Image (tube, rainbow, N blue to C red):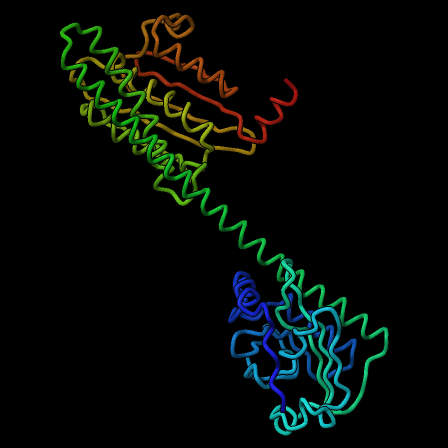
Length: 380
């Protein structure tokens, strides 16, 4: 028996093989389909996708063979990778000095005929072979040789596609990590600004200035909560609406402890481009309700409800406060808060309506979903 020679570029070849992360993976239907097809076309009882590792040949897929691997020094495929540009065909291994006393010939599985087409990586290194084995002396027709070559090329393309998918997955994972880190830093920076505004408030005696700084701080906190959830979530571009609204209300509830705040919403996911302006809208509406809808120390309640259909996201913020003195105040707002609400609603291509009476105030907001928004932008 003659052991297969080691290629001169063996170190680079092995490094390239392992970069495909294919060794010792579970069976896969795509590869099994190709070995089954090859065995049927070439009328062979055994067909194997064999990969040549440092000291073994490992079988990614096999038909008619039970062993998961065999030693490299007795492998037929170890010889085949040394001539990667051509088929290796052994009509009768018993008559070939390289294999006549090979354990795979003299013992199980009693190889007589062997034909192997090298599997070549996209970088040009031979990994192993797509090979067929028979228990009798035979050869392949020109058609069968061509079929084996083409099928081996398909196996190589599957390896290349696998590697590309792994690379894309890694790049996506890296991007997600970077995005999460970005959201974390944005959140931290916003919290620093919020803290600075709180410190600045302590240095003012003017109530109007303090209220302005307080409102700005609340807006910044609302935005930071969006980035906090994006950092905590598995995804980095979507926010779970109910969870976000609950955190927003919890934060506002610490300031307005006399107001009970609740969220009623199914599990809905919204995009970052919607979440940030929506956080400001909700924060402004709740803050205004707390400040102007209730008398000082008056107990009350605010309910935020959300729903979605295939066209729109619907949000209502309702309270049981004293309401507006007149509808004119909403139609022609003179406060920065109301201007922010209407500007951000227009930015989202949404619509907001207000109903107010002595029994409370309800704001109803409708925002186009992504598909609907795309249609609006396309026809604009």
